[in-house]
Amino acid sequence: MTALRQLAGRLVTQLGILFMRLLAMLPLRVVRALGWLLGMALYALVGARRRVVTTNLTLCFSELLAPEIRGLARRTFVYFAQAWLDRSWVWHAPQSWVLRRVAFTGATHELAGTEPTVVFVPHFVGMDAAWGGVTLRIPRPSTTIYTDQSNKLIDRWILRGRSRWGNMRLFGRVEGVKPIVAAIRSGQPLYLLPDMDFGPQESIFVPFFGIPTATVPSLSRFARLGRAKVVPVVVSMTPTGYEVVVLPAWDNFPTDDAALDTARMNRELESYIRSQPAQYFWVHKRFKTRPAGAPDVY
Image (cartoon, rainbow, N blue to C red; front, side, top):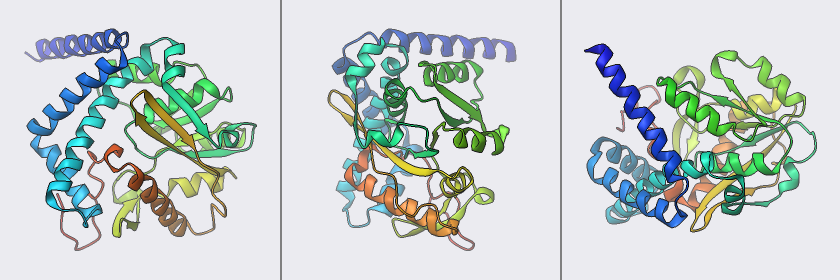
């Protein structure tokens, strides 16, 4: 029975990847319509994750009324599903399609040259489109940190998709800090997504929407060790694809105080989220790790 389950799981995964390859060739409006249907279905059917999203939004936007929170939660599921299906064309469509659908704007000069750089990429739903949009237009080799997936077929598919343009190097978390720092100092930008809860061992508590939140101080750490500037990149889903906006490098960052740096990161992140609250990755249990004595919010 175990072998049969493994075979069935492998077949389902292969069919799913084939579906995404075929979906890549459809017009964007069709992909987005399917994403809308999928998002609404997930909101209606996946109660446990709906409660996570609703809890996150209620904690962070306490000024909103319950009907407003529900509406924001529904839009969050829709954007999440649309962005997931958009990976089909980001990872499989012709390069010309991706260039046409992913706009690259803002302080793009910050990513040129060879100056050591850490790119702060918050967890907005379009983060994979952001990587594609940047790596297509910046010939400079760059790096990011990758967590292995338990499903090896999915793992290979994601790795191929994220490195399809040939100038993105993915470090596994098990490789440690040294090779990443060496890459930064050599002029390879590190794309870092530190706005997740990785547990108490790797985190410090700093405010996020006024809530003491377990936050990894890796942005400050890598910028300091790599002697690098920090450049935020914010991606927004649009009716025609995505807009990837490169913001100016932060002044006076990093400092010698990782806690102050990490608190600043969260303040900057809050401002980005408030501009498009439904496109943030609220499906993650952002407040899972709690300060000593604080109740579980989920």
